[in-house]
Length: 205
Image (cartoon, rainbow, N blue to C red):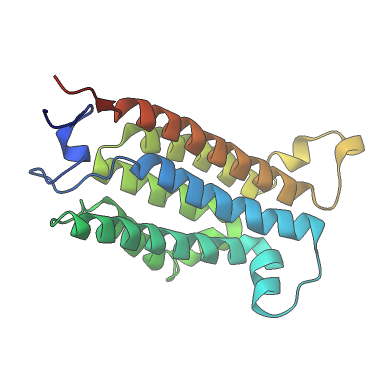
């Protein structure tokens, strides 16, 4: 009986010249980032009044708490993919390692000022863009540009201020961020479906 083969680029399953590529790097990335946004924004809308660290994450001014959570998420993604690569006896490509470093650097002056002005997507968009470019992952590059642009625009209340007065509510800003998080989760689900089709086992010959 022949061995099972897996469709898709070889670099996604094993070591290659550029290092290990996880077959689910796109979906895992978008699902983790989207879930972080959805969880914090949903908590801010539905369960306000948190105290302590959780309260700061949920309701800190200018979304800095969400920005901090996203910074941690990028480090988590880097460690996750690095561990998965080590299990295959090789190293992971540099994309998320560089992204985690850039996310940390953006908390230093003068970059941190942009986070207070433009909000958490001023970190999410550029950092995800660097990760996608480093991995030659054009799905992540495209999503970084799209979601980053919308999020930065809303960071200065660009969408909220254009809504009719009849639709304005105190939690409208958080609701738009929540919507962007839901879109990101949705993109992750679409990516996972594509990955599952691409990396299906092929019947033995």
